[in-house]
Amino acid sequence: MNNAKAHLALFVVNLLYSINYLVAKGLMPSLIGANGFIVLRVLGATGLFWILLAFAYEKVAKKISSGLQFVVCLELE
Image 1 (spheres, rainbow, N blue to C red):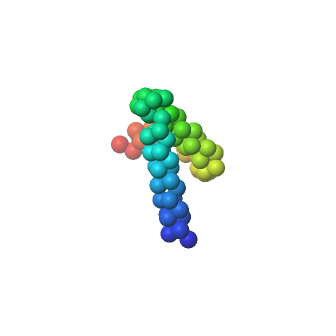
Image 2 (image 1 turned 90 degrees about the vertical axis):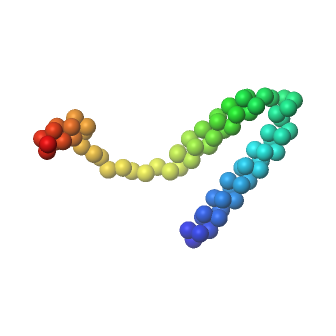
Image 3 (image 1 turned 120 degrees about the horizontal axis):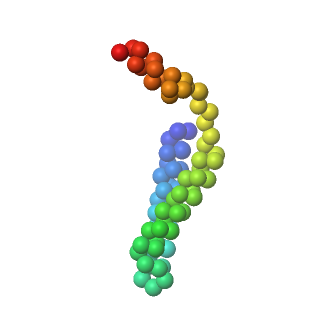
């Protein structure tokens, strides 16, 4: 199962790369400059990561407060 997830992830990455290449080749010389296309890629990747973050919630155990941790570290020296 884990192997299938890895293969699916590789396929999705290759699919996104190929779509990016085709869109860049069609848009760059005439409609949008290279810097503008890079900005669009960064904004698209940021949006995709925010969407994925919404589904990947992980509960993290509480840690002691940093002030208390600082005091404990001072006492140990």
